[in-house]
Amino acid sequence: MSENHVSPPYGNTGVVNTSPISQRALVDWVQVTFLDCQFPEELVQFFHFDLNDFQEMKTGNYGYHKSLRYGNIVFYFGGNPVYDSYNQEWRELGVHLEMTGQGCREFEQMNNLSWSQFFTMLNAYNHNVTRIDLAIDEFTGLITTRKILSKVRNQLVTSKFKKVKNIEDITIKNGETTGHTLYFGRPSSNIQIRFYDKYQERLERGYEVEEWIKQWTRVEIQARDEHAQMIAQIISVAPDNIGSTVKGTLANYISFKQKGNDKNRSRLKECRWWTQFLNGVDKLKLSQSAPDRTIEKTADWLSNQVEPSTAITYLAFKEDFDMFEALLKGGLERVKDKHKDMLLRYYRKHHSGKEITFVDIEKMIDKELEKLHKKKNAMNGEQTETN
Image (cartoon, rainbow, N blue to C red):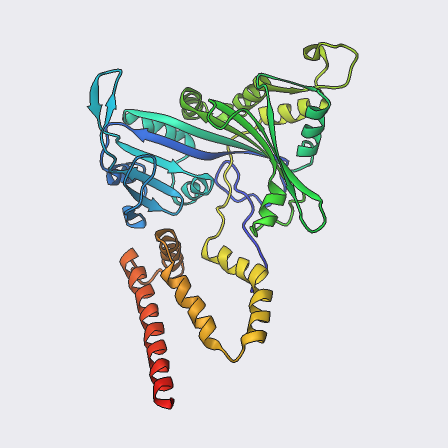
């Protein structure tokens, strides 16, 4: 198995950036409801996606019963009408688009639209931007969750938020703390700000990390409803101002202070590393980052995490290959639409000479299951004759 590797992050021009950077800003989550549209295929084509890349699923979310999916880009549709008590009428749910963090990376890779163009094009429809997450990645160690937690515990923070939620990751084997995630604000709030160790998170989940990255703190601003609508508007008309927007949002909600004698925390001087971080953010433009690999990532995970367990299982049961075939059969029977979609994208990428569809993937899985069933039946027949 090859060593873990992923392309360096893209610059804001879309060109691969091979040199280390200190900070970057990313769009990291988008949710939009198109109120008067009932057909997701219309939106797929309107936003310059290839309709052939998307597969219709019989599963939905958020009150919708179906979805049209490519990876982590999902159009939900087919919801039941809801009663609008304000206008005293029934209305259709429309179509709801969700792009997760990886979905945003996939959008950047597969679509020629910039984020500014995308958010401008929303205005062609009656729509509500219900959520946008902006992520600021810091790679120098200027800010860390430990620094922030220290300020909170020493009462050297002023904030519009009343509480900070701290989730601590502790290794059971040695009791050591491996990371913190700090939440300012509730998930349902119009604004929530999160700080966490992205470097540690990716290592623990078996994801690739670029070789030049040694420290990686992520600051996420989750904006909902009117705040999300405002950010979408700013990105559409003045994308180069996104840095100052993020800086203004962070400065408006949180300030970390230096120690001092004044009992009024608001009059204490702002600590240097926070001021320096905000000044850096002020100059940022939106960047792009390569998406995580899918089938390849799974293969790397198997190599790094599962190989030892597989090896010792083989040594214990090396005469019993039926057990391994049973594991494979059980896995094939549990394959879900998201796994089929992952396999479809892999085949389309690596077998470009042959047109392959979602139905082809389902037939492939059924064929492998049929082989395993026949083999098991044949072996059972041989055992019956022997007895």
